[in-house]
Image (cartoon, rainbow, N blue to C red; front, top):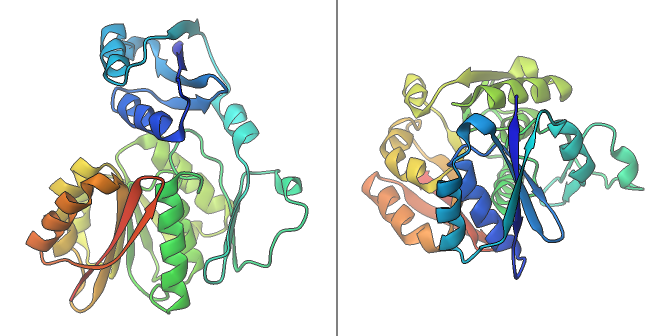
Amino acid sequence: MEYVAISISIEPNTEETEEILVAELADMGYEGFLSEDFGMKAFVPAKDFNESHLRIILDTYGIADYTKEYIVSKNWNADWELRFNPVILETGKGCSIRSMGDGSMVPVWPPVAYKLVIKPELAFGTGHHPTTRMMLETLLDMDAKGQVKNRRILDLGTGTGILAILAAKMGAAVPVHALDNDLRCVHSCRENARRNRVAHKIQVHHADASFIQQGRYGLILANIHRNILSYEMDTLSRSLEPGTSHVLLSGFYTTDVPAMLEAARQNGLVLHAQKENEGWSLLHLTKP
């Protein structure tokens, strides 16, 4: 497939600006993003490239300098592997995340309870982004309190499957349900579940939030766009088991928290805890 590679100069080059552009361009069909010294590169299938729409987005953030080139093919996964630095979380029992074959990048791995091997394959979720990191840290906190083991869990918008895989390793009730409306993510999650030897504990479905209503869960994980979270808050609430159940929500900015909390309140969900990292937020909600 032919792609268009857009090289975008960002001045000043900040992580926040880059993350905003990634979110905006992903909504326009862009499928890959690489950080560079000058800014970033974004890749979109040539059939989906719309330069006038691109200019509107860049103008919104005061960016005028970009170039484009057409690429016949690209080894996306090789680029990911080169830029995938190991992640080590020492919250609770601890967790490490690495790509295949990069064990030598950390001289001595700390004694963590959960070791994950992830190959992104263009799916979101490696532990590097603040939202994924907060979700992982909160899961580790809950595990230390005995709030994950034997609990029925759903991972909505699973991406690489990193959250579902960690939950399965923590002893969540089988099967952990992992949903995504992108077939590439479904494939990525299944492959990563096999790499981590928990494929028999996870059911991966090509589906949207409507699937949730087929079951009841003690914990729902959703690290997705704020608009989807707000729209589906009623579905999330109705899909929780009776008694104290939990919902972890992320994928939105700290400025979005008041609106998210109001949507939660209207659907019987109560704030249990809140985390912030680099302008992003996580809400840990419960349903009494």
